[in-house]
Length: 632
Ligand code: WT7
Image: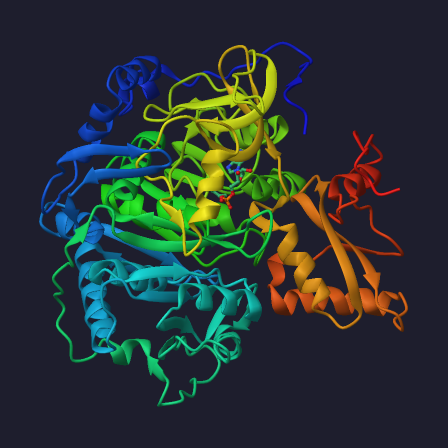
């Protein structure tokens, strides 16, 4: 990997400046001043944010930093759900709408804060009936329905550690996550609904728990779209039956600020996915502060984040952050192109969405189908637009700003990760936006672009994106694998290495280029080459496999696999589709290769490591760089 690289950018620097009223009314009115205030007293800055929330007992100390281990709000006691629910039920938000759910056919379910509070309490009491206690791990494998949110909050209510697994993952991926976390319970639904079809989640769970000795019970939400589900009485319990005959009040478990809140698995560049551990106190403060300040969220906003709750975006910016601030949150089991390419715009029009948060891959899809689709709908309610998951390229920025935001709405391109727990880099509402650049570190965060040795690159140059100081919502460890945690802090001296390449603009804005490691971002989803390779190799026809991300105008990257067959197997189109199907069944549809090439040999180092970058360079017709370590 190069130390750093120089970047030449064609054309003059272009900025978009929102109407001054945005700045005037923003929670963070003046970025530069807020950042200076943060630098002058970093812990004091975060302490001030923490005081806005309710604690059973406040901290003795804001931060205890013992590199690379941080403890935030030392000895403080809290429950995040008291802040998400009780706090609002006790004030004027009692009957405010907390959650509006939309199904694919436009069905609607609405929960006020009070109703959500009671549902969470009842389900929490139900979990207690099953013997779930503080510290137990609970796996949630559900479609994007209110019950998923209720299940998460109910776990948090009683101090159980949830591990949400996205419904697009397959049997093996689910099994690995259940076993790693040693989950006691799985909460699922009979089906997910996608493009008018049902996806049988429960069947996948049944297979995934065959070799999962820790599982004691499966809670099943019956959506009753087809026929009623049959439950195996010894093992399975109906979601709503569990909520019968219990109190609608449940005292929140007293959690230490450093007690784990959840585990969320994310792809690693090698080996199995990493169980990223987030804790109660710092995560609450970090997501609360960013939801309020990055989206500039006001009590009257109607906020819609299109991410599935199975991803960190859903954890931080569908559930915990927005509910902590008392927002009206829209949850839609919807895809951007079903029943037609107007589905998202219809939701915005119908519900009067004011803040809309989505991914560049969706924006690029909308660009392709044409502006006539959004133009058919009234999008005038929109106030702020957000983007997350991969670089928002200048063309996509301009389209989003012009066609959806009508040259009026600030666009917050937010850079962050499963590991960071909260948004880290963006252009704060009201500040000048530079297309192609995510922006600057938000007040509260110290980011930089450095060489491999940790020296800051000169403005105008590129290098590795790092975070210098601990931040409250940072991961605390990798579940049962602390060594992998330490790697984040010991790759480049004295900082957290994000794994992304970035460019530091002369104006201080940061442009994110993409991953520097073997992680592929496909349509905003994070997939490790290692996972796909091992899924391929588990097929009887495959001897060896190498996987790369191939740049794609729509999805950012596609998964391309190079496969060596075992003796006795012949390359064929049929075998290609078999292999793709095999990956789909093991890892799930999101990890499916788009292309497979059969090979006789793979480029390797003398020590036998596959050189994916050589394959990638060849694929893209570019110079593979230094190949001195390549075998013969
Ligand atoms: C990786 C983290 C955190 C939300 C969803 C993804 C890429 C994320 C941006 C952005 C450019 C971005 C990075 C990062 N990424 N946001 N605004 N601009 N790239 O979470 O699955 O943990 O993936 O997503 O490469 O490292 P994740």
